[in-house]
Length: 120
Image (cartoon, rainbow, N blue to C red):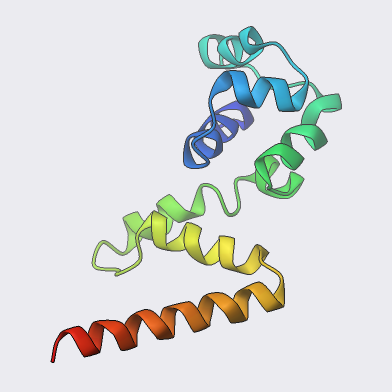
């Protein structure tokens, strides 16, 4: 997978439109279309802007680590319980501040208690 394919994959995962992404990065929407059609990559000057908008590291963008390996994990272990959505949720959790993580865990515990009460 080339860089532009990774960008498009992450945009889809983030439910981001081409127009929205282009505006945030500071490029024309047609540039993204060119990446798709001609299988070209963005200029070096825009890499950091792209990474900031997509909330990924330059290493992830350039090597595919953390982007492509999710697919490899799923393909290597079809019986795995973890879906790409599960992996994304864990990554999102790790980007939260510690206090937010604690609140999220408390919400999950509360939901489990409510579910167990409803089953009675």
